[in-house]
Length: 422
Ligand code: ACO
Image (cartoon, rainbow, N blue to C red):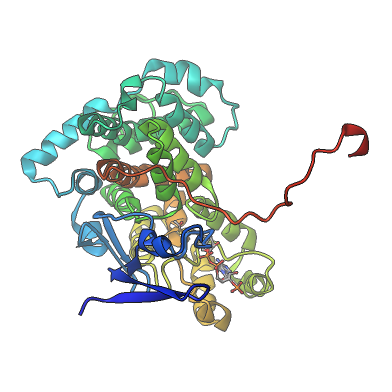
């Protein structure tokens, strides 16, 4: 039997039957009966904004799949570039396709000299790396005006390659400028993650040799961050892209949303929180403050997951592998104690608050030598294929411009008073 919902307008007695499709009802069918009546849903918690083939997420069960593949299998067996191909091209690459994809990305990795000489040099010495990243991606819009042809699928694919390829180059350059080190140019002989780590940490003329455990952890963290369906930054990309803005300003706006501490900026906020707590003996007092509403437990809670975030479990395991190479992170004890206390406390149990992906990732980044200001930048590199996959999918669906309604709560009609009586 087809599922449906019947609604009645009690003012007129009219009814309408609306089909239920995959747990959603069409707002258009609804408003045929109720024109001029809007859904009041400011944070879009109960609104589906897209039909999407990309990512499946079940927050109650703690499931995450990219194009049907469980995140646990992808994290274990595939590289970030394979996952990026899966997201933006729709399928995992075979051997020759992967080779071709790696060389396309490798060739597109360098950035125009003006980025180094003019744009990056223009920032204050202490500029936050995320501020630099957001502005620099937006500046790319002025370098490739042909990217404005957003209705052309081939042009979109060309811009997708450029953005995935250049993101690590811009990110590493932002870091090196900040610490006063000379820029390192991309090396097309290196794989994506080795190349990024080399551009970040290489000193002198000898090649940068990365420990395989650290390389694999970094690559896997990119995989875990690659997509998360209609999160705040992806929704931003879809909204900005729906106006047919070019992909650079679109992805820049997504990165700006990610910067916020309620979203990707939480990984930086977690580290600062752990440093402020200072010692695992202070955890109980800190949790008392959280329950009193003094502060949030950063890295906990999620709009959609009401169970353990599957990515957090994978990150926690990876942290132990990384610490075997780097030595343990002294903040780990505080994080473990926080998790233990929170998971056994009725405040967190009643609200279904569990660690999210950001709770343990910062500890790994810090142990690998990344400064705290780079944490959200690392998230942005990982999330870029996801943003782009959604942008491309939206434009391939002949989408309309995003334009919600509002409930007006301001003054009624009134006359403008003259300046002497205001
Ligand atoms: N610490 C303490 N209490 C919390 C937390 C937290 N981290 N998160 C939610 N709560 C409480 C809320 O205060 C609220 O309590 P109440 O019912 O007594 O008012 C209840 O749990 C429900 O929370 P909401 O605010 O409705 O949750 P929402 O879905 O709007 O927010 C969010 C989700 C923004 C992630 C929130 O949990 C949060 O701020 N967490 C900390 C920041 C963080 O880790 N963000 C990263 C998210 S993952 C990502 O974006 C990559």
